[in-house]
Image (cartoon, rainbow, N blue to C red):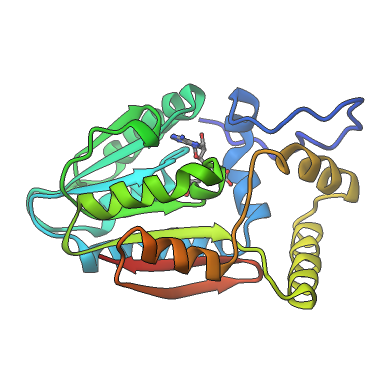
Length: 247
Ligand code: GEK
């Protein structure tokens, strides 16, 4: 499996199409997400540690919007509870196909990994089964805003006592000064990772109709409405954060 550098937006495009998780994106995805999302490697690695804390025997661990399965790999490495199984779901067939190859490679490198099932499907249409860990790692922001509460409600219903939802998202900020400063710092992060101003501008215009971030307050309120009793932010790097939501 070759990993290409992300140059998808390096040349001027006459018209920038809406961003889609297609084969072109799949080819460069590991490089793209690392160079675009501050704190991504730390979040993924620690998600395994968090999951090991919340996992309960004989339950599922969901990785929703799994892309190439980075979180799934961390869950499989860290969780040691008896009878746990990972269900990784994504609705991009290109992602799912490549994710299965990565997981096969993980199987050949490590022993005692949790069993995993990779499902091509819409996370709004899942046949839910009792779960102790649900990871939504930068996925909720791609769900239509009017469907987000419904999804979180279903996740809340599927979580067993003592389990947790781990929700990572790009944040926007109600305070204009805070929003502008953290947006500038995010652009600095991308430039420091080798993206040109043209790449940054074209990527932004591709993604603005597709990805709609919420503020921390909006997340807290929606999670409460969905029935979660407690929301604990455990990580923030510039304008990207991760929360633990307890049932
Ligand atoms: C990671 N979690 O590497 N149903 C299923 N999948 C969906 C849906 C949906 N309705 N909508 C979007 N997706 C990963 C990164 S990426 C985030 C997650 C990013 C999928 C979509 O196909 C994509 O693979 C993923 O959600 C979002 O930790 O690229 O910024």
